[in-house]
Image 1 (cartoon, helix red, strand yellow):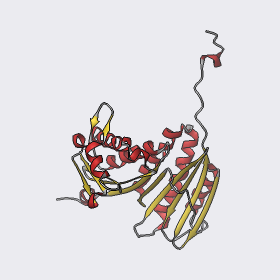
Image 2: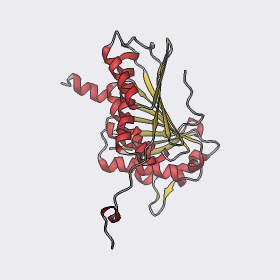
Image 3: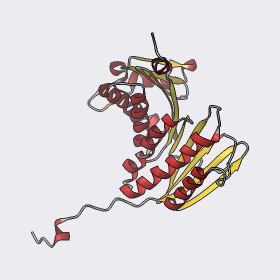
Image 4: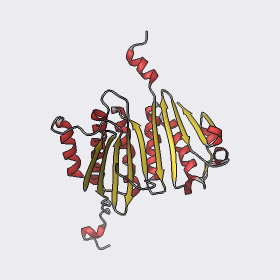
Length: 131
Length: 146
């Protein structure tokens, strides 16, 4: 029998909308937002780190690193963390999905994400990191 | 309602629930990472933002669900932070002593505090002087002549 606390935990969902302008605080605040929200999803430390690495790869890309503002919608559900980034013009989301990389580490999204795809007609990139 | 910057450094919207407050405090501390703000100033900033957001959680929406939005912009050595809700406006501090204490606390730690309320919601705009972290002591500070 599932008690009320377990049912509440199973239904838990937290959505955080966060945008960061082109300033020194962009990476620190977004990194903290991703860490805190993925922690709320109950991800273990290594997967929280993976989510942060994916964020860093996205922000290091030539397009996003020069964008006036970066918009993320972060969603935490039990055992699963979602990060939606966009909107992007044209085929930028698709290109990011294939090319976002970190120095030395290389392309990280397909290696670390549980699922990654473009959505909303290709304007947004949705990345899922499961526990 | 107050206007903070065309492109702020941070805009974050969360559910107006107690569980959002720790997350919000954690994110705001990113300004210390970015600007090397000294620990005491950062504590004041986090305290004030937390108080303003707590007021939203406790007072703004009654039994309704709602959101709290925090917008932050750095202008030179000044950090402007706006805490916004779309609740039922300001309740008189005389009616809710806890709210009154929170406002007094914010006023004490912020360089300036401006509050604008309407039936469409409340804006709390605070500014803080960003004090840089003191440089670490050197051997010279202790009279060493090596």
